[in-house]
Image (cartoon, rainbow, N blue to C red; front, side, top):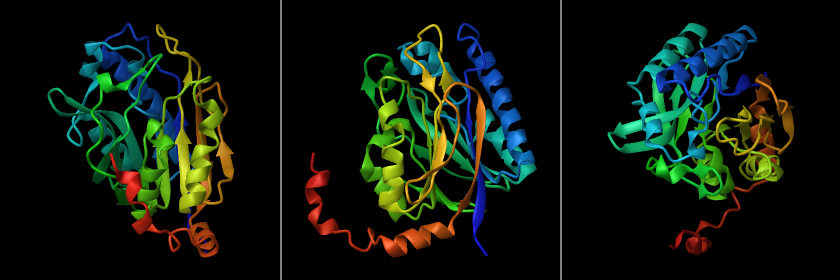
Length: 289
């Protein structure tokens, strides 16, 4: 019998004017995503992931200390606690990408992983932090991750997380595979004209090179007042052969659902022995400064 997991991705526009208070913005986005999670539960979804820093707009379009107010503790902050209750209610694994505070002044772009029984399993901190003009001023807000490339044994599959800009770096994608990931979720915020031509190339390539499934999430719409471009959606799942098996539109709020047959991982790896044929002793130059 096939080992199949029904997974979901949520892509959405920012739910509230950026002129409102941070708390009101976060509450509006939480309410929007909770409705999608309820919809996903009704559709039988077992694992779900939201987009990068899902409780806020993509505030890295400017450099303002105001947005430091959006940080929360993980796992003791209100959003993770709420998502633990939600996971328990629906028996659903939830990946929760938010702005994390370690201590005052030390902040990370992080995703918490909640198991289907509501247990907090751990977190991934975005490792690669861009500072790219115009409008991707992430080093103003985030320290580089310091937790490596962990994977998490959930009720339904062993998963990994890779956040947005990380996807341009094959080294971490390989590390997630070697650490046992069967599904890698990549919550993102990326705009047309910058990386859209790579959106359907890089992550299917990672899936093929490492023999796992990928769920890639992007937000949608134009976020004011910055309007750094169109967040073009097109969230998708691809299989270990690099084939996109379910995909959202580019311009509307949407829940993407796909059944992932995890038995395909063994089938692909038995054909393409990339892990067997690696030559790590020859790769030393790759990790030199």
